[in-house]
Image 1 (cartoon, rainbow, N blue to C red):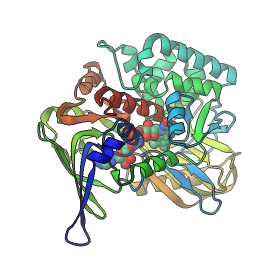
Image 2 (image 1 turned 90 degrees about the vertical axis):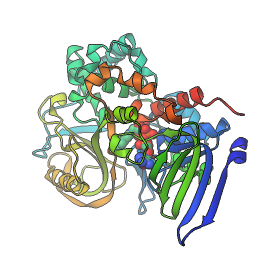
Image 3 (image 1 turned 180 degrees about the vertical axis):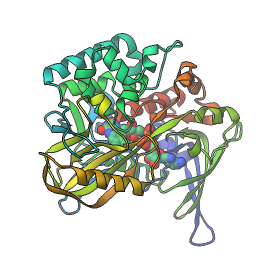
Image 4 (image 1 turned 90 degrees about the horizontal axis):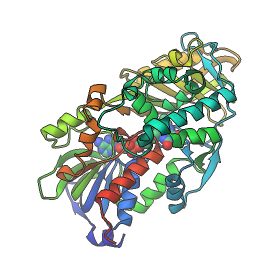
Length: 459
Ligand SMILES: Cc1cc2nc3c(=O)[nH]c(=O)nc-3n(C[C@H](O)[C@H](O)[C@H](O)COP(=O)(O)OP(=O)(O)OC[C@H]3O[C@@H](n4cnc5c(N)ncnc54)[C@H](O)[C@@H]3O)c2cc1C
């Protein structure tokens, strides 16, 4: 932090009013103030690097968003909710003085509803012995065959096992895990139908750190909500976190400082940074401001994503104790239908329901809201206390692009190894879920590994 103070300058120059011009000279510019970007920023500062974080949203934290209910003073989550029992979570929270509390996931009553009719379907969760046995078997197979997926990043052997390229539904059936493990596939929310997700991404997302926490019902959640740690980190960053920022251009001349021009509501900021960390999903259409060369363009053009939205919806007449899941028929793997909800879950705030909604194709937000309204108002069964009525949307978040993947032939051809070789080229590094998985503990570990590997301590 001392070095950061010395090497840091921020000059406010008068421009045509009311626009202000800010100039930042930094060791590292991090684009994306979500889980991985904020973690990397804090660690780089500890190691003596000056940083600036450029975040397009009005808040830091990415998929972490705690919804505050003004009427009751209660809060609930619209994205990240729980963390597995792993050291990087506990240590990082302790370091920033943010309190974690235990979060129990077992015990909530779950009902599987058929989207088309809105009625309860025939599928029921397996009993605890069957699911416990399947989780243990899943863990055993994972550790035996794919232990390398436990580590941050997508580290694959040169010859990628064919099983990892199978749809996850087939993997579960072939390993006789479909009955007991299949309900756990709701951890893959945001990835589309779990049966279709390539096994590599499914295992990577639900790794043993997660399934162990499921087995032991041993999760953590922040007492004041998941936004809190990013608020605290943001406060520490102060002016080194630029919110509501649109990256206008990124120019990376060889051997010189990289120049990042950013539009903000108060004016234009120009950043000169020795290095750049890209901490958001680098899909080609998100990289138009970057001076990509042919090989970078070729790499990022491989990424594709799923479509995922969450909504805080005021709904009348839904049982406040029951989590609703999407399954038609008696097979949880075959039964997930999209577009449709992953879940509609009570929030603990009377009348407020958290609807998680997915689609395999892009949809405008108004259409998503209209579909959620139609689907919710169709609901009818033991979990309703009268005709279901959607009163309104209190908040709506677009989590797209989510569950970033590349095509199977690219995985086989060693895409992730090739991508890894890009780390540091043109002073540019990458972290985050697109090259890891959608789990906070994992992307924090990815950012930790990146920082310790490429940014030796200056203090
Ligand atoms: C609904 C939901 C529930 C989840 N639940 C959990 C959970 O319970 N536990 C858990 O551990 N994980 C959970 N996750 C996954 C977790 O949130 C992600 O793994 C994690 O946020 C990924 O971190 P990241 O840094 O890669 O991306 P993000 O956290 O998404 O951060 C990327 C940031 O970059 C910003 N950005 C994008 N483009 C630009 C640009 N051009 N310029 C500037 N900024 C840009 C975005 O606004 C965002 O803030 C959940 C995710 C969702 C969507």
